[in-house]
Length: 105
Image 1 (cartoon, rainbow, N blue to C red):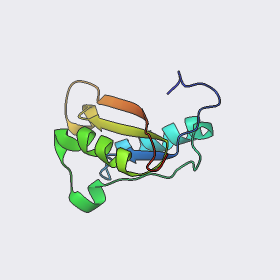
Image 2: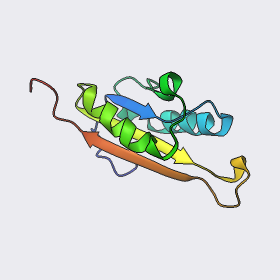
Image 3: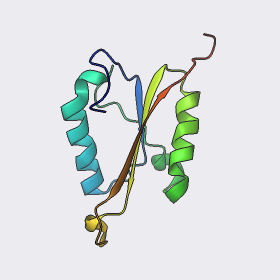
């Protein structure tokens, strides 16, 4: 996200955050450091609350949901694993910025 133009605005954020403290902290730090990019800083869609943890399917699921939000620019945030989950390697993270053609546009 550091490479976004200074005047970029993100309308919605979607995440596979599932309540783990470390991942929640990461999102909090990201919103704090990058709040100027968001039209509503701190607004987060977490579909895992409704469907449970879907594992590797979370990224395609979140991309599909982002396309259905009817907002122009969405960001999808996902991560997995890491030393906080007993693994030896750091967590893997993905940030995907989607510019969506809004319905009726």
